[in-house]
Amino acid sequence: MKAFQFLLLAVLTVFLFYTVMDMPPRGDLDAPASQIVSPADSQVAGAYYIKYAYKDTHTPNMVCVVLADYRSVDTLGEVVVVFAGVMTCFFILRRRP
Amino acid sequence: MITQTQSPIIEIAARGLAPFIQLLGIYVFFHGHYGPGGGFQGGVLLAAGVLLLRMSMGSVHSQAHVSSKKTVALCALGAFIFAATGIIAILGGGEFMDYHYLPVPFLEGPDLRYYGILFVELGITMAVMTGLVAIYDDVLGIGHAGTN
Image 1 (cartoon, each protein chain N blue to C red):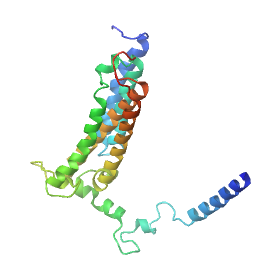
Image 2 (image 1 turned 45 degrees about the horizontal axis):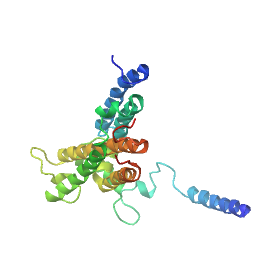
Image 3 (image 1 turned 90 degrees about the vertical axis):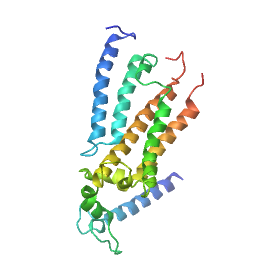
Image 4 (image 1 turned 30 degrees about the vertical axis):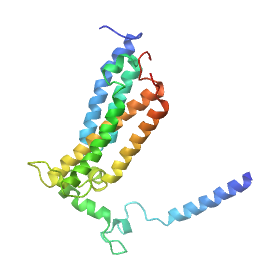
C-alpha cells in the first residue's frame, strides 16, 4: 500500500512539473496575460487596470485600487470570512457569566 | 509610577511600546493608498498593540484600553461599514460598491472613489482589529468578571 502511495505521488509530481514547464516565464510580454486583447478577442483585465487605475480613482497604488474598488465584492467576502471566524469563536468558546 | 501587576519592568515596557505599535498600524492603514499596506495589515498591527497590553498587564487591568464586551459589536460594525458603503452606492443610483454614486457633496468622480476606498479600508481595519482581540479573549475565557 505504501509503495502504491509513493508511486502515485511520483506520477503526480512528474505530471505537475510537465505542466509547469509549459507555462510562460514571469514577465513575458508575449504571454496571453500581458496582452491588451486576449486570444479570445476580449479585453484583458490587467491591461485595463494599468491604464485606468489612476485616472479612475486618483490613487497611486494599483493593488489597493484593484482590491478595494474593482474587486471590492471579493474583499467584502474576505471581511465576512473574518467576521464568521469571530462569531464561531464567540458562540463556541465564550463563557457565560 | 504605580504598577498594577507583579512585574513592573514588563508592564512599563509594554505600556511604552504598545502606542508605537498602534501608531505604526495607523500609518500602515493610511499608507495603503500609496504603497504596501491597507486595512488588513493595519488592523493586525493595531490588534498586536492591544494584545501586548492584554498579555503584559493581565486581562482585568487592560480592559480600560479595549473592553472585552465591545469587541464583537465593533467587529460587526466594521463589517457593516463595508457593506453599508456598497448599499448606499445602490441607493445613490449606481451598482453595488460603485463609489462614484455615493451621495457626498463637494466631491466628484475620482476623488469620490478615493475617499470611498479609504472608508471601506476603515471598515476592514475595525473588523480585523476588534475581531482578533475578540478571538484572543474568547480563547482565554476573558469576558466576565473575576477572570484574569
